[in-house]
Length: 445
Image 1 (cartoon, rainbow, N blue to C red):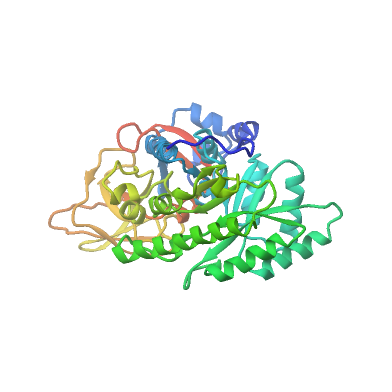
Image 2 (cartoon, one colour):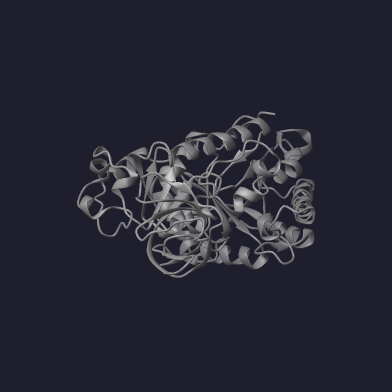
């Protein structure tokens, strides 16, 4: 099933702002950059033909081939199902990667808070979904002002009180403004969101009665209700999504959506976007009588797919669960042995300040005598603990030799808490076979 782009304008990013990143001077504040490159621009650094071997540990790298494959894979999947994608930009906070997503047809970029919105607008992103409620009066005023400058920023409301907060903030504004919002449906034990069908309808009716808000959809996040792919977890996700669909149908029946508004139903992180397509997909219309002549689109917000991991998402991703072509691991950690105080124990020079640990400890995959040199698989080895600046590598000294100065390649879990530790991240053409540094990705956390 293929559906045309909704009549909401074209999602865009300012290419000139992106191009200026090549003129940024790198230096001591960018821990991925070797000391000898300090004072060079990004353009000069890349032109010098640096390779992985020219960098230093601790280090996080991205894989260009994996990123391209992942971008193309989800874009094609969405197009085949008529699903729109507004990838969660907070995963990477990297406008260079947002641009690649938009160029592959992303509907817009999702973000989580006011500071992230400001980054996106600085780089000219003109269509944004705020997966949160606006309650800061300054943020509300800013969104209204950005909207008057041509941006479209949709936010969520999950209580009548949220509606009242926005109304008070806009009442103090000299210029009139109407903000587009989606009613957020939550689940018991979940995060934000009106708890259940009746509560969501109460919020929607408050929005419909407001002079400064226009209701344009229903939103939710199923990821806070499940954290595995067991039958019970998937059933909880589906039950929750059915509530979103029921709320949407009732909003149509009561004609609560704003005048002239196309409708968005949005859910779907990086773990259960297939469930979203299955349960909410039947709600998609291009303007049928059943939807009151309105266009209805389903928008997923997957963010981690672009820098797919080697842990949590590798296991739970729909493309892994269903035996389809899985996403490729797009990030790797590199750490050096700085101490071997006991047989079978090596201490590495990367820790929580460098690598993510919240969804599982790093996984030692290979070891070599030098960064960028030949590596051998690590068998029966594990990271048993991580401090601020160190990892504890456990190995069998009878079968594995570990020397001071050796470099370990680490598989990582959870991109959202990996990229935030780095202001500048080298991108390798290929992690194993072509270790040229082909780009430097800037992050803005």
